[in-house]
Length: 360
Picture 1 (cartoon, rainbow, N blue to C red):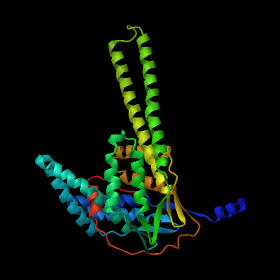
Picture 2: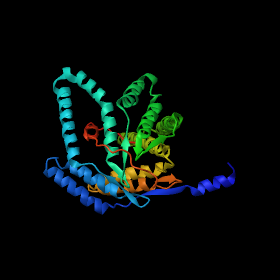
Picture 3: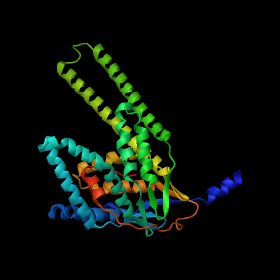
């Protein structure tokens, strides 16, 4: 392909940015009503609260002038949630009061986990729509079990070295089994891309503590060089406490940096490697920006005793949308509807009850 053909191809590819138009004041009204009614109904309204929240965020997320839709029924979510709660209570009773049942319960949990993953993705996809076309997920139990159960078993036997590959396989399964209308997604990333991200994180984990250690050694040398009479016992104790706190904060800061780096880079890689027909996604999240948003959001929520949760969620959603776009040469009107099916909410609610973060 010569330069003229490349330029024509580049010009013909249009970029469609995502946009989130919600604001903290609007969402605060939704959020506070959700909390009040959930408390007054002893948790029953939580299913309606989830739908109201999802519809607010979906309805304020624009792509090429159209918004997304969340189509789930609160009744379906409530039924799934009640069944999931019953199973969780049985699990809790078995673990805490009938130790002999712990092993059977754990076996049931392991066997059920792939089903929960598949049903959670299926429910979420089939209840998400854009321009009247629904998403779908066709991952099967055997595929999910292999990627989420069998491969992770090897992690301790490989000293964790296989984890980037496992993470790659999980993301590939979730993306490559997703559909929009009659078009399926493809996942173009490779396992080496995940290994590169984790390799950088490993360098951070190894090199930065060495710097901290060097600083500590130099500081110890300074203290050792001081005359014992120059610092009273109380002052020495205070300096030791200060140094201990400094090391603790630096360690926490390192952990935070590595966590945000990995999650942000994996998010960018996953979205940017996802293609759909003649369209491709792109995510441009920046690690420093995400670190600041997470930190300042947590600080604002703590200082406001939780009242700034809506502001924090809206702020994060706006940044994510502003740094995500869709590239396509054929526009967004060529997609056609696929077969429509209903899906049970039990899988997704079970995932929430057992605190499983299952998403692309």
